[in-house]
Image (cartoon, rainbow over all chains, first blue to last red; front, side):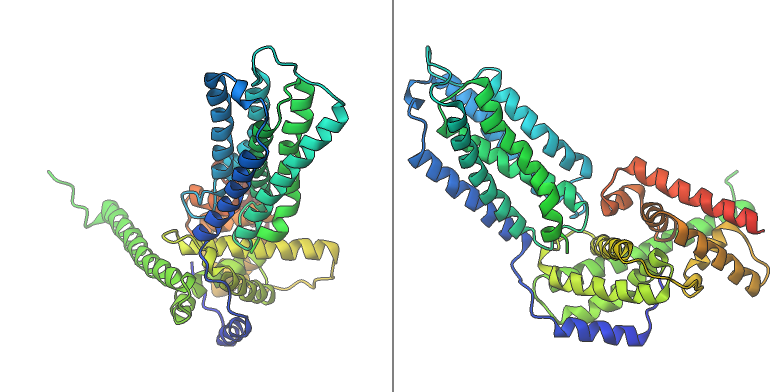
Length: 218
Length: 215
């Protein structure tokens, strides 16, 4: 049912829009591709400069299976957060919440049920806190880059469920951080994997939910 | 013997179906033109703004009126929506339904205003401005016999809708007055179809109860 706005309102709107600085014309798809590119650059740096020292000793099948699963989880997580949805308003809120909750849980399952390591390796040596902070810090940095890149790409683009979208973005971006941790860190003690590798994913889902609305709402 | 659909009850139903189909066809044509204008505007073509405004402003203004139930506030939400639409135009997903995107932005603007008001409560004098936006809603509940009665009914509905929680109000407006499907309304509201149906039903019951009480 339509109702004509008064002519003076039309004039107000036109004047207000004319007074605005010209907005960016970079389309959303391009912005998201650039954000994804940022994450991939970070991953390349991790692979080239921070690869775990025991990777050559890990059985190929184990490496491919577990790393492949983590890669798929990271891809699914970020796609679940950024796809446009059937109506261009983003994924349904049920999908967003599923990503935010399921990604950290699945990461724990994939990396903890049968942790990846060379045969006979020690699960952990050294100071627990020291190692935990190091991995936690590296993952948080990667997650920050990823989440920051996607929040910047999606600025002003999410009028629907911005908090849920932020949570999914946080979890999706941090899943890539989890992949970085998985590629970098040789320790497979369950406590270390939970605290230093999986916890950042859950934390960034929460951070995304809190921070994202201010940035990604129109 | 074949049924004659041109007369009697069957004929009336057929004419109503034809009317609805004609309205949907007209809306679909307008929708296609609007989506095309939005695509061009999103791509940076400033000349598309006039066509965009012409095509979207009646629906958007009606939506803002029903959402806010106050003309002055509807004007502000309407203007702010156009501004945000302009700033975010490059984020419009090509090929999607422009109207839904704009409705989503308008609702987001309105939610922000509600949150702002909660932190800074102001004494709002009662007003019946904007009641005429509910003429179609009034018509679906009753058949008033005079203009005065119709006006009274619209004011009752306006007050009820104003008092509803925002999510019920928006669900009701999207489904019952804007004619969107449950799935479309759910996408705009960022919730599930079940939740939309429940909210709209609660709003409908509240209006019905109020009309019954006023009658």
